[in-house]
Image (tube, rainbow, N blue to C red):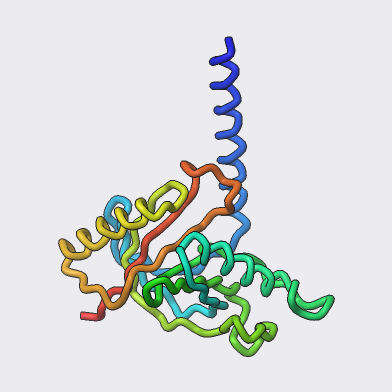
Length: 198
């Protein structure tokens, strides 16, 4: 009897998590891209120029991730700007990459309505910049985005790129689409690698 209750509770949590994930996808703005090629979980995409707010922290990826997320969230939610400051809507995904060993950069993509000129000023430790248009190879997967999973998916993406004759133009970037309360199996994560022009 207890096992049946646990199973029912687990199923109920899965339904709630799925509803939360679906609601989040519907409401959260994501950058547009042109799909060039798709093969299973792998895609080749053309992204336009994107305006981002970025910050860098050192240490482990997990530790830097928490510190960077809190810092960027304080900016977009006007917590470190004068009272009544304009809040900026959260978008997805949150981007992260390692700029040098032990140094992790996190980027929040700004909503499409903003330009560098129309964004509220940022504190000195946060950089507002525009990423150039890029062609990106991507692989999509579920889970909590653990380091082992990211490394495995990066290796799979590099294998796919090699087979497709695509040359990397930079290091891997990680994209996380979901809030922490979304169960791991329902989360969307991606590894992206910039592709060199032929």
